[in-house]
Length: 175
Image (cartoon, rainbow, N blue to C red; front, side):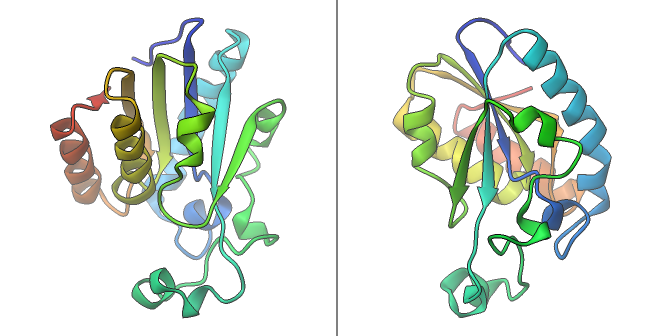
């Protein structure tokens, strides 16, 4: 269960149209949207701050190192696929949104520096959730960093479980 108290923050990783129903969408991602929405509603009601990340690429994406290894245009800044999914847009009001040009964002470390309980959820467990959880654990080894496994998804269940196992090895709480 997500730890929600006055010194908690929830990071919503890349819940963007392209990862849900767009060019890199998966059935697993579609399945978690209602539960993520319910979680964010409860968090807002309790005054828990939210931070959203957005995978953010430019029109030259296919020429980047990432684009050469994953040659699928996605999350191009300003497109519909780059936007947070419609169900979660209401929760972005008064929230921090961090655009990140690659998997992990050191800017998150600055954004969460005053919180002791940091929970990540979202997409994709094996890439951006994992990358950001590892970055935060490296910056803050004594903070309570967790990943909500039922509110995260990956390409399939096998890769989801592999990512959760890797984060658990790095002393990130899997809830």
